[in-house]
Amino acid sequence: MKTPLPRFDPLRLLVFILMVLPVLALLGFGVIWLWQSGNLQVWLIAMVLCGVLGYGLQQWLVRRERRLLADAATEPNPDWPPSADVVWQKVEALAVTCSPEDWPLEDGTWMLELGQKALETVAHCYHPNVEKPLLELTVPHTLLIIERASRDLRQDVAEKIPFSNRLTIGDLFRMQRWKTKAEQIVNIYRAGSIIFNPINTLLSEAWRYLRARSFDEARNELHRWFLRAYVCKVGYYAIDLYSGRLPLGDGEPTASPTPLSKADLTQVEETARAVVEPLRILILGRSNAGKSSLVNALFGELATTADVLPDTTRALKPFVLSREGLAQVLIFDSPGCDSPLFDSQQMLTAAGNADLVLWVSPVNRPDRQIERDCLDALRAFQAARMDRHPPPLLIVASHIDRLRPVNEWQPPYDLTDQQNSKAVNINAAVRAIAADLAVPVERVIPVCLLDGKVYNVDDTLWAAILDHQEEALRVRLMRCLDARKRAEDWVMLRRQMAGAGRFLRNLPEMLGKRAER
Image (cartoon, rainbow, N blue to C red; front, side, top):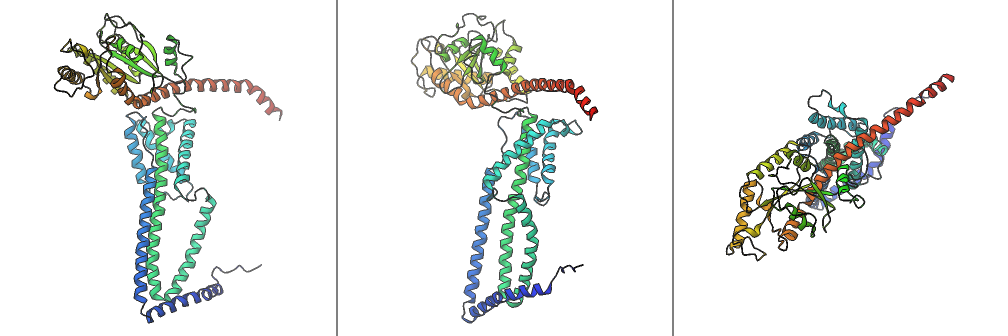
């Protein structure tokens, strides 16, 4: 039996010393020469300056990397409902507490354990009374969260970390193993150099400490960012799931009309032309306020009979509106809120399915209490729905041509002009409506809807609608996601029942084959 090689071979140490001895001697003689020539002080000052500049540059690079990584931070989704704000704050708080010392990357269990901790943080917020809320997740949704979080994190790592597309997992482990051996050799070198050249060694040790500290800080900063990014990604998609914004299927939720919009489009024979989910605009207000006239003005053509009697509009009537700068729109005319045909529950249901609400209020009717009561009921209904953002609300102040002086009508009007009595009265009416209906004054748009005298619709009102289009599109997305999730549940149930039926049908045949074996 052969004798195993000893762990420490003195001859190998002697070989190493003989190899580094000329280099150490050269460094020592170089310092002696600098001292004899009187340049040692200059060399020391140059070495300190270079060290300080190098350390400062390294710190600047660390801060620059920190800013780049901060730019890649996960932001909360603006499409989330208001209830998700508190949950996201808890996810961010968990991410801040993650430190490289507690979660070493070489430990293969960190990803599973940290991901589970992020999921539990979100799950506890949505199921506070359940002992183990994480078990409320379905298997497909759990896999979907991991898939989406890993996909986003892969993109961030590939874009932000140098050579991440070249280094393999095996390289990282090999580097970790060689690190210990390299440190042993370096320690031997440091011990030998202090004997032959103590002054240079002390300076080198100081510089090595600063350099190591800088690189360790950069490495820890990257490690810390990676952990926080992972927690935020998992928390992000967990909130998406629990708030109903993470369907299992792929594809854009607004790519096709929802069943509700299909039914409404059928009434106006527009199903064939409907390619995507239309934006739903609901027009509300009191009778004779000009709701139907507003539809006509937005269409630019006669689309519906204008209100002449309080009961002209008997139910919600859809119309298709297509204009430049706005996606396809379904606009709904409604009965007056003071009409006997007005159904408050129908209004709330319609408002829950609307992406933008236009409230028409006549400036010549100061008795607005019934409008305020109706709007307050609408706002209370929207506030109770923490899973949805309310649709934007614009107030259309109609009949401004009837303000004094009644016989004067010479638009356009500058509402800041204190010399024009018509402009002053329009401005006063706008502020009165804003105060009576408890809305911001900038959301009140004065218009004239009289046939042949339509004013301020194509410019100011349309600009306000386009200005709130992005907010309305977010509401549409949330509405489509809810509809898609409901439809997806039924589709998945049908597929699962069909699969179970096929399995039961083939079960006797499978058992027979097993018995034959």
